Image (cartoon, rainbow, N blue to C red; front, side, top):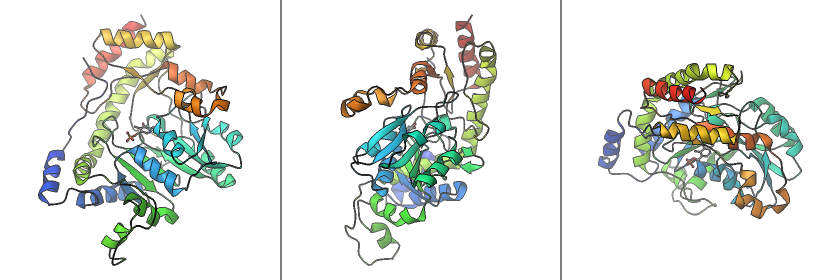
Amino acid sequence: MIPFNKPFLVGKEIQYIEDAVNSGKISGNGNFTVKCQEFFETNFGFKKALLTTSCTDALEMAAMLMDIKTGDEVIVPSYTFVSSALAFVRQGAKIVFADSRNDHPGIDETSLEALITPKTKAIIVVHYAGVACDMDVIMNLANKYNLFVVEDAAQAIDSYYKGKPLGSIGHFGAFSFHETKNIIAGEGGLLTINDDRFIDRAEIIWEKGTNRSSFFKGEVDKYGWVDTGSSFLPSELIAAFLYAQLEQLKEIQKKRKLLWTTYSDNLKPLEQKGLLNLPYLPSFATNNAHMFYVVTQDIKQRDALIAYLKQNGIHAVFHYLSLHKSSYYTKNNPTESNKQLPQSDKYTDCLIRLPFFYTLSVSEVNEISKVIIDFFK
Ligand SMILES: *Cc1c(COP(=O)(O)O)cnc(C)c1O
């Protein structure tokens, strides 16, 4: 069976974990944490980068930093992972769901202005498959209505919008190093803070509401409880693993792009015959080869193709279920139950993700492509 995903080692992960243990410190905010954060700040121009234990945590930190509270509205695409909405619901926000673009699962930027009310506090964008949303349009709207923008960049490491690294454009960005992403640490994440006003407070929220970071920098002579927060920082064991992956970022990306292009070249003829759709890349976006997906004509064809792949030893999977139709949301927002988001529903029904991970081989991609071509014969 070719699995959908497989975690991988690419360099010195095990050695660095041993180094961390031998250094006598494996709790958070040690040498490897600092090295990872500096790597992100230097290579991607984030004003401040803080490692977290997940992207979900990073989104929760962003919600706290924006002081989201009961009565606030937050705009979120419906076609995304639960955390993109849940992190703000926990602070009391009402979620207003937006649709996807017709040509891409990312948020339809032209639909946003109509969703803004005097209660709107923030727009959450998700760079699906690492492909940028149209950030100029979104940031202009945010400026016009005085809103915050959070980039859920969980899938978007090393990807760009008109040359700008994703995660560096909104007020905040949130990345994931879950084992299904390009760079992995088992579980892990990163909050990027691109607005100076929030940097000091972010460090406090990160460290359980204490000014411990200032204490270690010698800025105060004792530390105590000064704000809200939680335990958001990962252990050095996670940071050590992550740093070894970061050292190999170029290598990982090179391999992933080769796999992506192989799928794309192999399956292009099916798209040309109108049998399915391949990922669309807007001209403002780069491709970080986070995933390879196809979009079928309907849900019946999707299920049949997944079953056919399975019979042939290939594990392919569908992805998100429109959050505006989820049981949790509809139960808590009965007045929103008639909302129509047809593009989100289309991707819910028709999108299939194909096996994609660093140690997958080009010959396996060729084999998977051949099975898909056979299916359409
Ligand atoms: C993976 C993912 C998350 C969650 O990341 P965790 O690190 O598991 O919390 C959130 N949003 C999107 C778009 C994701 O792909």
